[in-house]
Image (cartoon, rainbow, N blue to C red; front, side, top):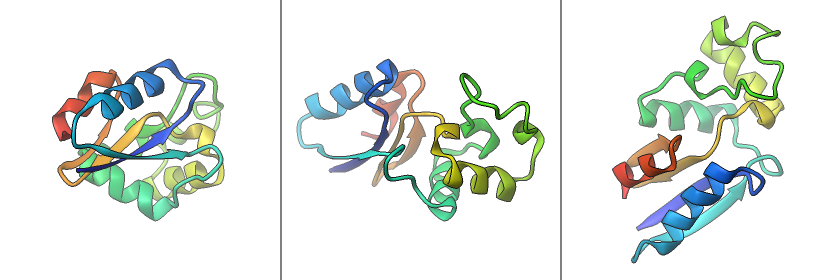
Length: 114
């Protein structure tokens, strides 16, 4: 099974999720450091749809100006465009497999798609 993780190596939850993926037999892991290679607004929309959450639920609030900018109340297109332009606004880690996608907070949520 292939798994793609949008990863921030400075984030403990992201590192723990990556460790779960790497320790699971049969999982081929692709690591995307999303701060260096951000996903497009279209890719984010697909990931959130597959995860069953809204773009607003995928916003990183801690350490960002998302609230000051009104992003939690903004429409999906505005939130997705802001995330694509400023990937620090993306909550992490996002993981995608052929079984779906999850925002892995806590990290054990990744088990749902393995």
